[in-house]
Amino acid sequence: MENLEVFLVALFVSVALLNAIASWLDLPYPIVLVAGGLALALVPGVPTVELEPDLVLTIFLPPLLYSAAFFSDLRALRQDIRPISLISIGLVIVTAVVVAVAAHVVIDMSWPMSFALGAIVSPTDPVAATALMRRVGAPRRIVNVIEGESLINDAAALVLYRTAVATAVGGSFSLLGTSLEFVGAVVGGIAIGLAVGFVITEIRRRLDDVPTEITISLLTGYAAFLPAEELGLSGVLAAVTAGIYLGWNAPRIASPQMRLQGLAVWEILVFLLNATLFILIGLQLPVAADGIEDLSAAELAGYAALVIGVVLACRFAWLFTTPYLIRLLDRRPQQRARRVGPQARIVIAWSGMRGAVTLAAALALPLTTDAGAALPERELIQFIAFAVILVSVVGQGLTLPALIRRLGVVEDASEYEKEEVEARLAAIEAAAERLQELTREEWVNEATVERVRSMLDFRMRRFSARGDDEDDGAIEERSRAYQRLMRELYVAQRLALAELHRSGEIGTEVMRQIVREIDLEESRLEI
Image (tube, rainbow, N blue to C red):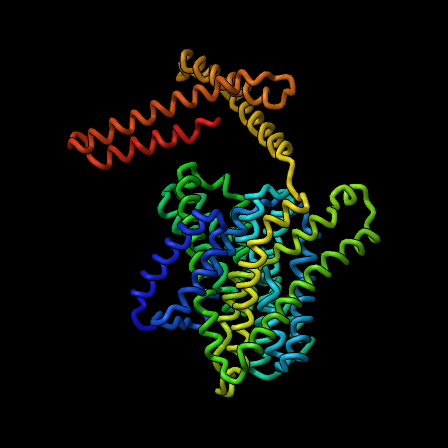
């Protein structure tokens, strides 16, 4: 691509501006970025963006998959493994098959390319959906199911995708060979992910250098994804497995400084990767449409509408049939207690937006077959895939909050608060017990012990009062007054440091170090 550096600068400037607009409009950034990318692509004079087929799949997916797995709620995944597995594997397969049949019968695509299209549009992306759900207070369980679904369905969809593309490129297909390849890709991908996770854990356990640890963390997704892909296994499952393994062991191998700095780095990286992908979706849609010369705009719109309708119909049909079949087979009391009503299933169905994986798979379609001929229907598949993403992110994204409120699928915040208070009290009790043990040590000063004990006692009374229905709120009011007082003092300290820095009495490094310490102190005021 010519003038790559100019394009990259313009891309990131556009990302920043569009994200600012999203904040101003109080919308999740994926919605505005997709629409903004499409608007930019339609501006006369904007250069055509053509990406290498494997670029998005190889560069963008590994860190996104790894970070999603690393920061996932493993307890929630275990509790809802059955519904997550059903929609992330069963629904993906059903969607891919039904889309393939529709594409073959109506659009007259070849069977391999029809299945490639089905595999491309079957996986979901949780970024926009979960951002909206958290904003309107949707139940955490629904959010966890949506996030858990995206961890597994990517692998299932990409294994189907790779098989379909290999058949389209090479022209051969074997049901037995494909089935064995599917099982081998899954098992092999998980094995490589576990091996990489174990090795990285042992390496990081022996390190105490934050920049090095962060660098290793950023590269771990690639360390799992790339070898698996080279061996013909599931790179997606490898990256996800490594992320889950390291996320489980993170409390034992990461220092507090690593957690603080690493989280900040990952938040920025994931935002930039997702933002770039979503704006590329908008930029690529006109490019794909321009490459289709034998179809009219009405035909393109009709084909896109067909696939969008099939994808939505499959999701609604699956979520309103399989739960009832499962209920007939499993009547255990603990399962009956976890059942959700039709309102929640409607929200889950409408939250099935498409995003990064669909874009990456569409762009990764090979340009030619093994015989050297152009891959048939490549541009048409890309156009339909981009249209599915556009409609799902913008259309479903804009209407999801209203749907959640209309159906009343909102979580009672008291359960989360109860869990938070329980965790804080357990931590305070552990600290108090350890403090009592340390009073016997010679190096512990009695005055320091009393100071710390007083602080722990206040916190214990404060959080215990949160669970007391008869509490008059006096202790919370006292805490808020203390926080207000301390924030005023922190502001005064920062202003004094800034004045010393401007007058040349202290250097930049000293100022930044002390300001960072003040910032950390202020961040702890709530506890």
